[in-house]
Amino acid sequence: QVGENEPFVSELLTNLATTILDLEPHQIHTFYESVGHMIQAESDNTKRDEYLKRLMSLPNQKWAEIIGQAGQSIDILKNQDVIRSVLNILQTNTSVATSLGPHFFPQISLIFLDMLTVYRMYSELVSSTIAEGGPYASKSSFVKLLRSIKRETLKLIETFVDKAEDLPHLGKQFVPPMMDPILGDYARNVPDARESEVLSLFATIINKYKAEMLDDVPRIFEAVFQCTLEMITKNFEDYPEHRLKFFSLLRAIGTHCFKALIQLSSQQLKLVIDSINWAFRHTERNIAETGLSLLLEILKNFQASEFTNQFYKTYFLTIEQEIFAVLTDSFHKPGFKLHVLVLQHLFCVVDGLTEPLWDASTVSYPSNAMFVRDYTIKLLGASFPNMTAAEVTKFVDGLLGSRHDLPSFKNHIRDFLVQSKEFSAQDNKDLYAEEAAVQREKERQRMLAIPGLIAPSELQDEMVDS
Image (cartoon, rainbow, N blue to C red; front, side, top):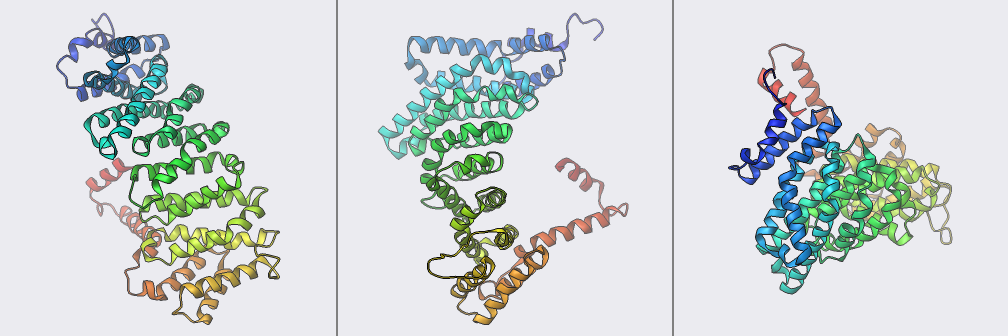
């Protein structure tokens, strides 16, 4: 402004220590994020980097001091006040990374390797404390504090990778140094010391860098797959955070690095398919839907690959059986739309397969479609003993007849379910959820066309939501 010697942001940075003197830590984080927005608006790269350096000088000074002391004696990092200081510094960095985006690069480069060393050290401390103190040690305030450092480190890296979208090469160079301190550490840890944020960090990395991550997928798979599955498949309750993030990671791999799935051994691929089947059997809606969406993507990708016959010969019948099991279980009604899409895919893909799905050494069928018809009739006949063979046959013939027309295919399945004993006495609105949503939107558009029918405040809310 006129009469000022320097821009306001520069003046603010000069008096930074005085400005934040009386603020609480969480207020300081908000303040830093706000100043990050101001710095981000500076178009001159040199000035912007200089402002960032001045903004981060206080936390960086403290960080350098702690790292220097830790070089003398590692025990300093076990001091609770030091742990809180480290956490505070990391949170400040995350706040600035949130607002500065890719321009945060000079700062994260400065602390990155030391941060990974601190992460590894705290992680080993968590593991040894839990190993010595048993399961209750994981609930102690000391362990919770140590784990909050690990989580904040992962959050900081994920925030930077996520925000550095204009400059993907910037974030990609941080992946190799993370492999052992973060991935290797996850695999080595006891289950209670594994951070679910590791899974979401690598899901973000794969979603961001897509096929560029192909070569790293085997390493990621090896580090997190088997050990996470052992944690989450004992029941449907333990480790809820790991569940959803695990399947989100698997979905990222299935969508962007499908070639990596093809290169897995048959045992590993079986593990993937079994875990997806397990996901959509889950009563937690988010997990079931993630599992079904992932299954649909993998089925379509295999259909388009040269391994289509091999894959469907191995998994077609298992998947059909599993999908019918959840489709006819009233606990899984919210997944109806995706169940129908998977079944439609299976019934349509049959025509394109050139190898028989049946065991050629024991029986013979004129075509895969005839075999699938026969198999489905037997499968449903056993599942619905209260239905006559004629009713089941009519239903299966209707499925095969309407498989290329999704609306009639869906209606056919819905009518069958509503008639069946399991669903007849229940509220089946979930089966009609998609149509109801379309109807609501039509009604809303009709009301919008008539001025004054929808209150301005409601319109304002919708604008905010969108």
